Image (cartoon, rainbow, N blue to C red; front, side):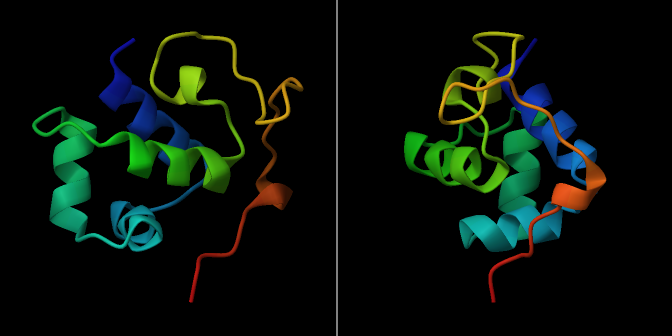
Length: 88
């Protein structure tokens, strides 16, 4: 799987818009869209922010593994009730 496809998939799993994720990263929606399409590469600093936000390991988020784990190494499981509030 391409790293940029994983960004889109996990965002959809959390029922978030590109604008909402861009807000988390403190960038514009069009810049985030370029990351998801693979036009631009996202820096490790932004991957770290998203890993914390989604509570998922960097190796999964970047597409290095297809087995998702949380940041503490537990199996990753997402339910709609876990939806995080966006930063204000």
